[in-house]
Amino acid sequence: MRWTVVVAAAVAVLAQGVVAQPYLFSYFKGNGEDGLHLAWSTDGLTWTALKGGQSFLTPQVGTRLMRDPCICEGPDGMFHMVWTSGWWDKGIGLAHSKDLVHWSAQTWLEVMAHEPNAVNCWAPEIYYDAPAQKYLIFWSTTIAGRFPATEESGNAGPDSRKLNHRVYYVATSDFATYTDTKLFFEDGFNVIDATLIKDGEKYVLFVKDETQRPVAKKNIRIATAQKAEGPYGHASEPFSPDWVEGPTALKIGPYWYVYYDAYTRHRMEGARSKDLVHWNPITEELSFPDGVRHGTAFRVSNEILAGLKEK
Image (cartoon, rainbow, N blue to C red; front, side):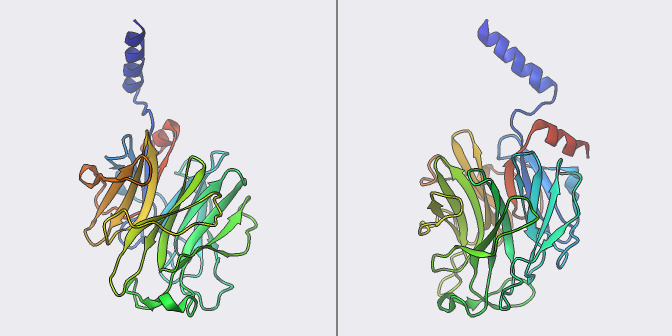
């Protein structure tokens, strides 16, 4: 009798169109010209574009691109998004929303304005550090002449420059005042596309090894720390294939799912793990909308998803 009631309740929930645990994936298409795209999933494998694949928000700041959109929900239910506003900007985009449909005015944070030799701000991420009750915003920047041992010619964007990326960050509790920019992760190699999760008592930073010479690696590695602000230890050996970027991680049941953009193969790929050490590929199980480029996977409520579907 007990199981009959449980099954009946589950059927009733499904009949009402309620999704038990919806997830969203924020992404960009092309070069990021048309702005924010969103897809949804209930299993982390099959992702469906919302709004018929149209943009939810067009870029208005910086060089007016919206690449690498990262969305974080705060403890008050407000969503905060940061993004790459241009290939060679010294700042990043920032906006806020209660429902992911209606957005605040966009702000451009010139996080590297104080560094005359900084040439870019790529793939910013935002993470809420609950114990410290503040947000961490981190990104990758090349500062010409700094870390010269790993400086090498790049091949990204509209031109080629000497690149020696490291991850930098600022912190804020109110989005009105910010700490000074500081180095966030440095492990002796060219690094971009950092993303952060908390697993039990440790903080886990996924990064892309952007080393190009003598052999291009372009793969995903992991570093850990006891606090969100670090310090982070040495990066692990890569667990992903080569020539991937833009990792994002999502906890589904006992597994961590990590998705990454296989940009030379023109598809999203991924892997999953229970312990963040032993990984199994899930690429052949994945289905993403056409043209999807990397962003952030995160959980939302049924109410948020319903509002997005109405849009």
